[in-house]
Length: 331
Image (cartoon, rainbow, N blue to C red; front, side, top):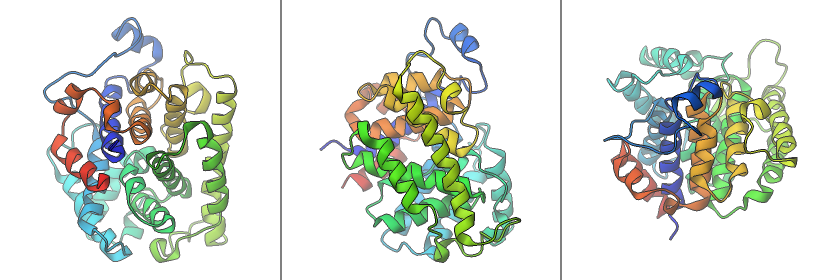
């Protein structure tokens, strides 16, 4: 048994931890801080992660508690509980994203999620945490709806929803044995099929935003931006260059579709070497921890738990939660 779900969740945490100290730094400063090639490994007791892993665990715990009762009311209630538990935690001190903080402040007031969400935000905070959705044993339509819904609780921009959905689809594809070589094409086909699919039961009237004529037009705008980043990814992979800062090719990752594309690029540059992939992601000029956490999730979903060093597994922060959730979806 390859334990793909465990590999995915641990990989997310390892990438996050590796990129934590390189976020906000240009590549030259990263190499000066970690000569000669950037951070080479993980250390610490425990190995500390950021809000990226914390929020991925929050999504995972909500789905774990919902179990087979995957209805909008139940999933919303569980996500609200775990998001607010994270928001109030004394460990929520890892430079959390402004959008997530603002939305959780609103949720804590008891507001309806449609009022709580930050409509204009498509920051990467909605897809850095979505990996557990991609590991669910659910039908594709339900998985897509939940991927977008968990994003919508904090990030109300259509591209935030679409990028989270696309990230979850990539995780589902890789964890079920999809080969990296054709992944971009399969994701492009998926994005095109979903481009005007609006999940009314889950998203309600979120689409009622300025300059938006219909639900289909709302979500299509998000998928269009994701497809543009897939264009960038395909262009980068025509002549793969492992030595170039990936952020210069597919974006710095501060917004959702760029984090997805750059995280995936780093994995596809090193499809058979998960550690090299997250190292490449960490040595980047953009949102390095979020990019690397996505790279680690992709690599772990494909290779399984055996991809990662045993001492990393033993010492990572939140190991108990990662182990429980990984085992749940590895069953």
